[in-house]
Length: 235
Image (cartoon, rainbow, N blue to C red; front, side, top):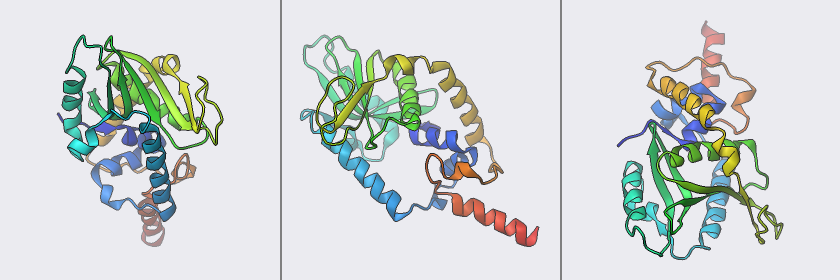
């Protein structure tokens, strides 16, 4: 099954509806700076370091690559492989699809009762609102597919600072299950609005502004600013 939204597109849509539409219809227009690419690399390195704590984890991205619409079915197959077994399953980049939204969870730990512990890994040193919004979407989608026991964000605890659950080392781990559960209605409303945006045939005419920089520098700024310059010269 195909999807309309992903967690990255959802976060983009919260920042700007025009950027969301471009992300779906004109992604070739995106321009990323060298620093943005370095930040992506640092994030991947931090994520890999946390995943190394689960040596038996099954990496769906290694198996399926960019065929992301295949991830949910393969995830379901792996989670249902040994019902009633005392063995535990750990998946990396497990896919879940609900309400036309596809999310890939960084680390999914299946307990012996079938419930899931989810870990979303972020390389930042603070638990930002954007991280929370990202996690809220994932919790919403995954909890409609499977029973979620816990959902935690893992972020950079900076050289041994302990996480909220007493975990040492660089990984601060904070369980946000109760907070994320309460966000369900808000997430559903946001998804409905964003699906209307991406299904539109015309690019929204959202003006440029401070939202182009917060919480992330938008990769479509040059495109939108070019339109402003053209209007000022020839309008």
